[in-house]
Amino acid sequence: MLSKKLQDALNEHIKNEFYSAYVYLSMSAHLAALHLPGLARWMRLQSQEEMAHGMKLFDFVLERGGRVVLKAIEQPPGQLQSALDVFQQALKYEQKVTDMIHRLYELAVKENDYATQVMLQWFITEQVEEEGAAGEIVEQLKMIGKEPTALFMLDRQLGGRGADS
Image (tube, rainbow, N blue to C red):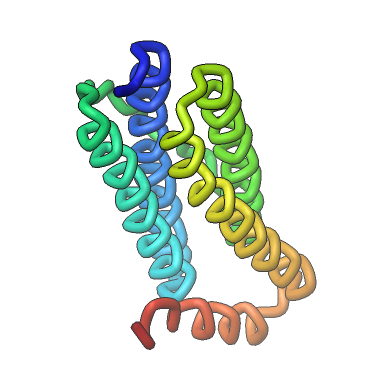
């Protein structure tokens, strides 16, 4: 059984994961408006992945006999510029999510909740991948600069995300 404190923290993080999905969907719309359909697709799939993360936590709380309480989701930031700006913001946001998950893990340790610690290990590993993927794209976009042909090629490459699954 989850402690009240841990249940409340997990419910807050469910909201954060759903907010992440909303942020990435907003980024997808911005990239689509820049006529970068591959980058937009990458972000749309990222949004779907974040929804799945929220549902993973949702199901975990229920499996542990807890109560899920869904909270209001804020509007995502709207000040986006270039593709580089979008991915820099995504990287910064992933770093923030990593910090949130670390705090959740610390609480699970403090509450001696081993099942939650094990479940959060998956999220910790996932965040390494999330930061790595966003960071790599940021570096590629920096190398590209304002070269339209290279941006077009990267757009096509990233648009293939999920095509083989």
